[in-house]
Image (tube, rainbow, N blue to C red):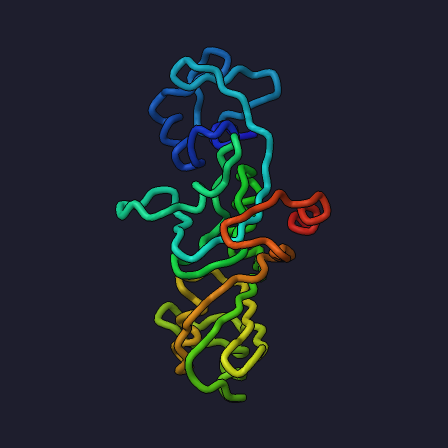
Length: 226
């Protein structure tokens, strides 16, 4: 395991923050200053500012994120953070993001390797959203959404689209652009009144209430990794 991944597993910082600690010379392995490319073996003694560290147990959490919470770890406006909802001893961080006004399925983990893979665009993890909208849903709109929408930052990949009711759509996308679903709907003349992510990859929420979370089952974790 790379040293920055070990520090993240120990709960002291994100991988980027861990890199900064290593560069500052604050991390040692077996008494020697750690480097960015240093590997940590099972019996190595890692210390931060002379204090011993140990890797935390891996945790995989699915949260039903409520509206009004942010997924970033720092916020100058001091808004509520999703990590404050997770009452466990290990330090977990969100995989990807959900907007402040969007609710639904959010994965949190301290498995940095898995988190990086899932967040990378090349893995194309499906994310399914239910959007309550204002405006008339037409066949033309459904075709446009399923073909891809031209936004300010380029053409979106085709979405899987299903009309659930007169004012509700289900969209499945695998990209992770900022406010993408809302912008796609706006581009076809629909206003998003409410947005909820019902699935992240193979992970659904079932009866999980807003603000509540649970550990992934072994079967769910296997599906996610595959």
